[in-house]
Image (cartoon, rainbow, N blue to C red; front, side, top):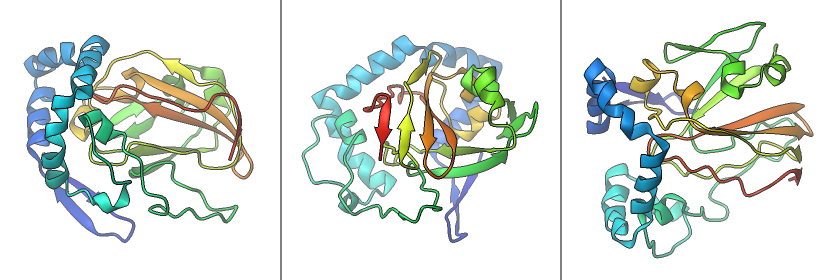
Length: 237
């Protein structure tokens, strides 16, 4: 399966990696999906996380940077002691300019983005799989509030900067955790499994100054399962 990515200037890039071909074979057959089942279990994800926390995992970092073509000038210079230490790297101050004009909607992360309108009882199709907002939140009452609004989907790839921010100043509620699996979020999986409704995730309700009430959801993925929100309820800016 070949996938395509377009940047903000309309430039289209063709993606055809070994990972994509492997996942297509696994998700494309009943046997493959059966073999994947233990891999998406939270226990295995935790074990994998411990391996990627080990010092020996740091040996994979230079090759990954070269293969993914990551420009390390965007990040604070440091020695990485593990793969996860690299994965949670800090961005260099000034590497991401933020438009402070009140009406500017700031992306919360480096990602690919899709936008869908939310109507009454709507089923949003993301990569051929249908979702409701209530399924994503597991909260029909909260989901009802967003009828007439928009659902923004920000998809991070493994080589993206995996920290995120809030879209605006305001107040945030508590972080609500929803336990689940750790399916990959690659397009081949999204076509066959309701990944966003099944994966481990966390959401926060934000009372923003310029965009009203926004609920921000972070969804875990295969081998990228840990979600850490540093801020509790209170003022954000």
